[in-house]
Image (cartoon, rainbow, N blue to C red; front, side):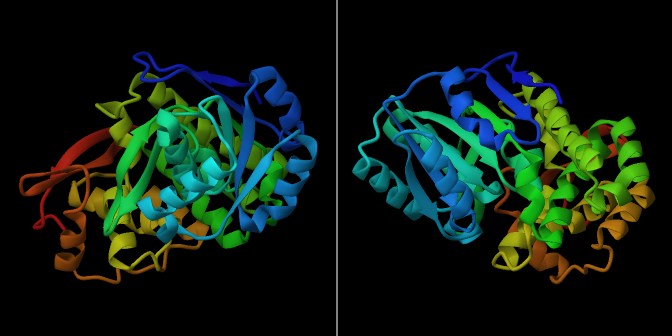
Length: 342
């Protein structure tokens, strides 16, 4: 698969290299030599990836590890403070590099840490889940939650590079694999009909984890998101389309105290948002959600309770909330909806 140099048209920060191929993880030492030199290198990693982290520690001279435990509830300022203190203990400087190895939550957390530590240090993301590879690690959005406000504190800062190695998915449980595919479906549904057609035709191959199909699906998600971010890094216009399913989805996550996973919340949220905005062509989307195994998921909250949780959304206006939905497959729009629509 080719490399994308993600260089926004009106850049807030420097360009980001997006690379995707099998075996890329083993080549990280050579990649670091290619990208530059740093005073020190620090690895923030999911503790479930300790084996991979130790292998990287052995191959990158002087690398210092920062094991991390915790899911979405750890994505908070208290955790940022703790990690920043650990970086100081490891004598990180403004010329240090932070490598983040983990899923979407850790990419959000680590990217935010790198963007504010000593007013910003270089960051390299190595996503380990489908959701992180196809979505969370791409685009430079970093953030943490504040009480019930999801991603309300954040920055936009592109990483030096995003290194995507689908071989890291081999130990990923099937439920998490399928949840990550929801983000790729979302992007195709609202951005590119040809990609949606490909997913419909090849989803069974992807679910069987056939190498070529998995690689193509992930690269589709990366490419679609990179094209949007290149035009609208600051989410002033077209990047809002990537929030399809996320207004309801984030409210569901918050209302359930994160018992409902992100992927499942977005799977529930997409058809509901389309109905609220009176959008057409939901049948094909629901068909794919069924094939992913999420068709039987039910809304566990009343409309009033969900609307209350939606008031924490960054896209709210006075009495209404903006949602992104497909006008038709591959063509998105942003609409305002109210409690009556829900």
